[in-house]
Image 1 (spheres, one colour):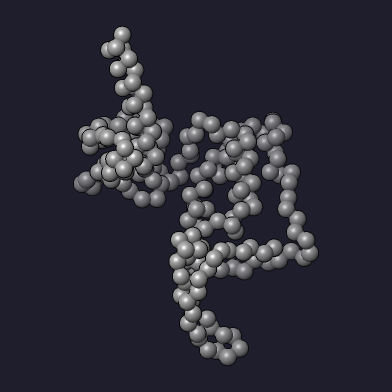
Image 2: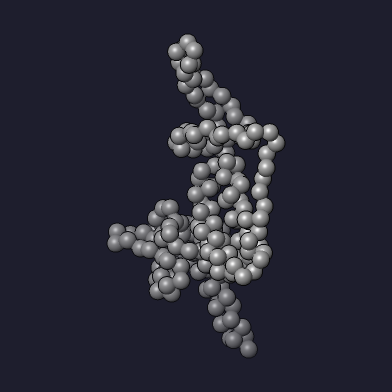
Length: 201
């Protein structure tokens, strides 16, 4: 009886460990098994390099997670950035939420966070497309935000500038700017302390 219990615990622990390893893989950078081991260790999960390598190979051969490896030494692992998400509880409500967030919250999120949401939005839109016979799936098309007064045209900022400004607010760091006056032609340097981002209109 005790032997059977140990086997069951091992199976559960193995599955949870693989989920934890999957969570350490990124769509945007490559990761080695040693990096994964350090992250697991910081979370209190002990695993040998050989165990992590074996789990990665099994996950790779499962063909459900779009795991990529390169031929460098040590081997680097990542997830295909174009891969669809595999989320068990990705239901209609979750899909509607992500589609609405993509439509209305773009200006409220730092570009780094927005890019990480892209796979969720792609998966959400595909989910809703597949259940068009359900009227609730059309909810994002049935609501709109209507501002008071005349609609304002958003300024087209350079993406690098947006990244720096939002990053400064996100990390609570000072921001050094160069202000070029259109009236005098003078260029002044300022160090500012941004407290937040205000989106108007």
